[in-house]
Length: 638
Image (tube, rainbow, N blue to C red; front, side):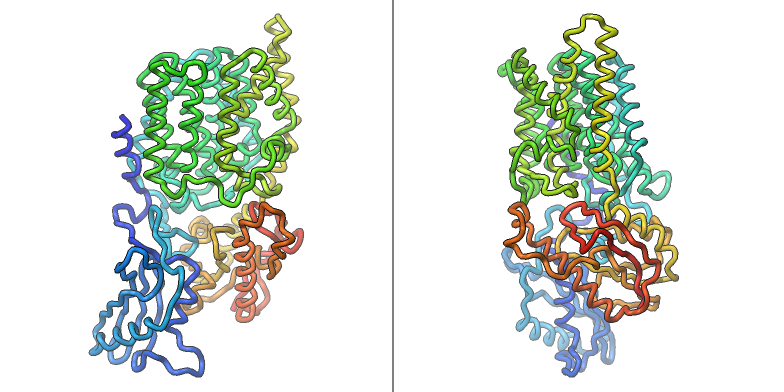
C-alpha cells in the first residue's frame, strides 16, 4: 500500500509545464540587473561587441537570450555549462544562431567578455521545479491557473468517498453536523479578509491544494472567492472531523463536541480559513489522519488505515512540515499499548511515510529558520492567538488527566511538545501570522487538552440536562472571551488591502499598460501581481520587475507601482538595536531597504503626479516594516 501510494505521490504536477524535465540549474532571482550590465554599454563607452548591435535581453528561468544585429539577426543563448556540479557562477555555455554571416565571431566576442566577468551566486539548484515568482519571466499564469492532470485528484476523491462512508456510519452524527455549522457560521460572521498570500494561485503552495482546486477549472477561471470558500469549508470540516476523532478516542460525546467547538473558535484557524493559505488543508487532513488512526485501532478497519495513508500524503503535499502528523498519530496509540499489533502497524506506516517524505523533500523538512524558543506563554497562551480561557482549560485538562492517569492526556502533552520542539518558532510580534503557521499542528493536541479541562466542569452534576446547559454556557463564555483575539487576528493586513486595491484599480489603467514594481531580494512581500491582472480582467497589462530594467519596454504607456514598502525607511535599524529573534533575519531588513532604493530610483524617471492613489493602514503580516501608521499605494506615470 505504501509503495502504491508513493507511486501516486509526487508523480503528478499540475503546473502548466507538467511533463517537462526541470533544468539542472536555474537563475536565482535578483541578478537581472547585473546580467543586463554585461551587455548594455555605459554612456560614453564603446561596445565590446562591435560591429554587432544589441537589440534586447530576455532572462528566463534556466537560460538567457541576447539578441544582436548587423547584416542579419542573431540570438545568443547562454546556459549553465554543466561542466561541474559545484559550478555556481559564470562562465556560461554560449551558442549563437541567426541568419547573419558571422555567428562564430559573435560567439567568440561573448565568450571573451564573459571570461573577465563573474556574478557570484547566480546559479541555484531547483528543489522541485524552477523558481516561481511574481514576474512573468519566471512563471506562466494561464487564464485557468490549474489543469486537471494530477494523480492527487484521485487521492482526494478516494479520501472524500471513504469519509462519506465513515460519517454515514458514525454515531451521534447530529452533534458533528452542529460542530460543522458552528465553525462555518463563525467564519462567515467574522467576514473574509483574503487573500493573505495569493501564491496559491500560481503553483507555489503545494500540489495537493492545486489538485483539489483544479476540479473547479471545469467551471471556468478560478477566482480568489472559490479559493477562500474551499478554505472555509475545509477549516469547518477540520473541526467536525477532529470532534469525530475525539469521540472515537474517548467515546464521550461531551468531550468530542467541546473539542470540535473549541477548534472552530481558534483565532488563528479562523484567519487561515479566510485566506488563500494552505493551513486549512493541513488541519483538515491532519484531523482525518487522527480520526482514521483511532478508528483503525478500535475496529481493525483496513479502510481506516488506507484513509490514514491518503490523508497524510495529501497533508504532506500541502506543506512538507505536516510530516509531524505521522509521529503525532503514532503517539496517539502508543501510551499503554506499545506492543499491540495495530500499534506496530501504525508505527510502521508512520515511519514509512517519514522516510518517503525525507526523500521527497530533503531540504524543506527543517525547523523554522531564524526562530527562537522563548516561553510557552508567548507561544500559545498569549491572548493574541488564543483566548485566555482556552489556555486556562488546557492547563486544567492536563491536571485532570494526571489525576485520572489518562493516557490520552499524556498523548496531548507529548504531541504538543513535539511540534514545539520541532519548529522552535516564537511569535516575534503581533503581526507575525506567517511564522505561526508552522505550529498549527500543535493546536490539535492543545485543543484536546482544553476540551478535557472544560468538559470536566460538568462532572459534579449528575443531571444530564444540567450538564448540557453547563457545557453550552461555558462554550458561550469561551466565544465571548475569544472574540477580541479573533478580531485582532482577522484584522486585514496591508497585503490583504493591497491585493483588493490592485484588483479594483488595474481596470482604471490604459490599454496595454506596463507596470514596473519594486522586487524584494528575498521571499517576502506581496507576490500576487501577475494573478491580479487576470482577476481584474486585464490580461493586456504587463507587470515588470524594476530590476529587469527598461530594456523590455514596449509600446504601451509605462507606470511605476508605488508598493506599500516604498514609504518605508531606506536604512535598516542598527543590528545592535534589534531584539535577538530578529538577528537571523537581517536579510529581510536589507531586502526592504533594497525595495525603497528601487522606489527612489524609479521616482526619478516616473516623476509625474501619482494617480489612483490610496492610503492603507500599515499593518505588518511578517517582517514588513513601514515608516508610519499608514502607507500610500498608487501608480506613477512616466
